[in-house]
Image (cartoon, rainbow, N blue to C red; front, side, top):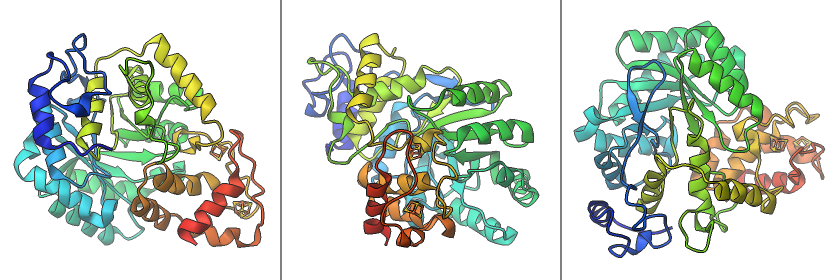
Length: 389
Ligand code: SF4
Ligand code: SF4
C-alpha cells in the first residue's frame, strides 16, 4: 500500500479537476480530467436517527495514524466506527486524539463485547468514553452478535437502555455477520435502532429482503465487509477493470454496496491515505455494466478462496460433528490472510467461544464439513492451527 501523507492528500484534494499529475498516489485511480467530482461527499439519512451521514464512513479498525482520520473529517466524512476491543483499546485512543478537537463534526460509533456482569459492562463503556475523549458516543453497538436470543436478552437490553438514558449514547444497535436473523429480530424487538451487517455482492438474496424490511421499519443500516479480500499477497485494489485504470475492483465492490438505497453508510477499513482517496472517489458514482461483469469474472477467478460467512452464508452452520462453526474460524483467518493483520486476527480469535477453538479440531486429520462454495476447509483448519494453535 502507498505511504502518501496527509499533506499530499490535502494538496491533491485542492487540485480536484486538474488531473492527476500532482500526486503519483492517484496515478492508478479513477481521478482523471473527466472525473473531476471525486472530492464530492454524498450523504444519506441514517435510519430514523435524524442524522445525515456520508455514504462512505471511516472504518478505523486498522487505522494507526490520527492524521488520516483528521484528513477524512476535513474532507466531509462524518461517520466514524471503532470498537472497545480494536488494538486492545489503542484504536479508541487514536480516534480519541482526533475527537479532542473534532467531536462535534462526526457521528461517533463504538462497539462493546458485553458480558453477563452489568457493572463490568458499565465500566467497559466508561473506559471507552475516556479513551475517546468524549462524554458520549452517538451509537453504541452490541458487538458481533450471531443469534436472536442474545439481542432479546433482558439483561443486555437493560444495560444498553440505561446507557442511552444516562446520555452515554444517543442510539443503540447491534453488529453482526449473520444479517438476516439479526435484522429480522431487531425489527421484532422494537428496541434496537441500528444494525451493522456484513454485506457485499456475495450476500445471499434473502439478506436484501431483510435489509429492506428493517430500513423501512426505521432502523439505520450500516454495511461492513464490503471489500472482499482473499489474500494479502493479491491485493484486489491493484486489479484494474480496464486498461485506462479508471477504477479498481475494490472501488467496484464499494459501488455495488452503495447501489442499495437501503444501506445508509459503509465503513471500509482505512489504513492509508491511498485507501481514503480511493474510497472517497466512489461516492455518487454508478456501477457500470463493465464493472458488474468484472465482479462476476473476479468471483470466478477467485473461486474457493473466500468464505462469505461474514456476509450471511449459512451453508456450513451446525455441520461440524464436534460443534465448531467453521465460518467463525474462517473469519479470523481472513483478518490475517485477507487484511494482512495478524494482531486483528488474534484479537478476533480470542473473542470466540470455547466451542469454536482450534483445539477441538485436534482429532481430525481431515475436516468433515463441506463448504457449499468450494473452500478447502481442511486447508483452512490447518491455517488456523498455524495461526492459533
Ligand atoms: S465455509 Fe463455505 S459454506 Fe461455510 S460460511 Fe463459508 S462459504 Fe459458506
Ligand atoms: S476439523 Fe473436525 S472438529 Fe474441526 S471443524 Fe472440521 S470436522 Fe469440525
